[in-house]
Length: 206
Image 1 (cartoon, helix red, strand yellow):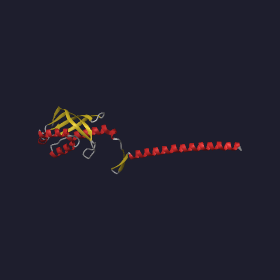
Image 2: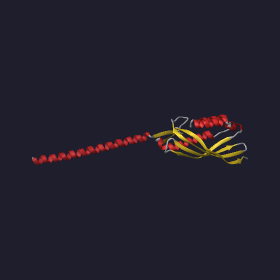
Image 3: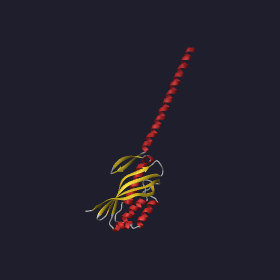
């Protein structure tokens, strides 16, 4: 009788141990499953589907910090394109400059006001002059805030009889602001300054 009780007690201990092991394994599997589910949901929330030309295109959302250098360079390029691309048309000049001034502070506005007061834009219109710009490179230091930058570019000033090529180097800093339709990158150029703007070559037009 005693031997049977001892065997029953031993068997009970084995069953209890096995049951606890099964419960622990189930708990671990449940925790792992829940964790993976949350990760999957999180990844799915970062996906965006864009409908273009009747086709669904998949895009991924990312933290802005990952894109700061790219967005900063594009912001600077966009500003320079609007501010320095001119045609002999008052409406075109106003439209481009207005778009550019949404991307910069009063330092750019002061340069525009000085040029306007000195008759620069009037000379563009009366002389039928067009001005284009080509951005060679943009260097942005994202280690310190606000982000300092230098922009290296070349200008083509197209007159009736000649094309003047100039070297243009500018600098400034970028401050974070709210994104909007007028400022999609969410940066504002501050302390904008021209370091160099010198003639390179003059070509006669045929």
